[in-house]
Length: 283
Image (cartoon, rainbow, N blue to C red; front, side, top):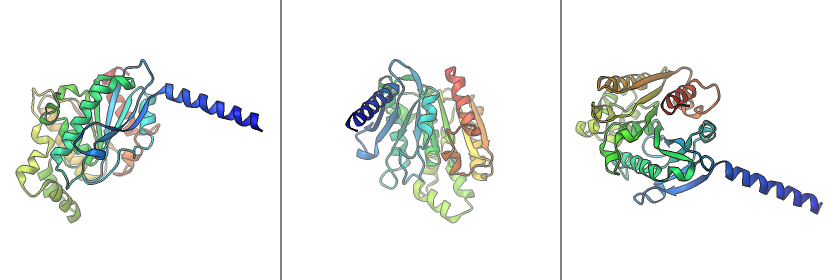
């Protein structure tokens, strides 16, 4: 009995070592001193000696809640395709505004740029992805150059941006067309009732040629009218400015399942994401 237990423990040690060699995983790494526990990230790295592209994931939650740990099968799916996967927390409204939140995203990108090599990642190939409120924040950080510039980077330092079912790329328009009073109340609470502030918070406001805006893949729930309209508007603005943008409607999805299913085999939005990323990294 004792011998059998010893053999079992030895085998567990071997499995643990092999798992550690396959990829470096670290959680609750601080990327900024500004937010304490809210400015931390988790890294799902690749094996030693690799140099894979990096995906930085920004969760949703109405700008007021959410957690970096709720990523389901995404880390495994991206790691298996040769991508380092980083998921971040950021500070919440009302303690901070959208400006500080987009600044947190930029700070996380700076950290990834500086430390990607420690996890088998390539600092020259960084993609931003986010769902819902996270979609708004990655789109804002990917169009308004002030956020990356504040940490010594440029828009062109991003290889691509993938917003997933966002509906606030043009905030004044979304507020004006909001059907549900609760949704309008949320938007005015987060972005105030001041139209100048709403425009500043809108990614479409900052799209312009010659700024190095990265390529965009914009996913939205096919039957969600506001997300569809906002996605197409952002894509049109990017194209008019000479940029690259593709919109993919996700049939049969809800706002929740388009996020929950991302990374699953045979999931159409997942295929679209890996095609978009693959075209830019040669995978």
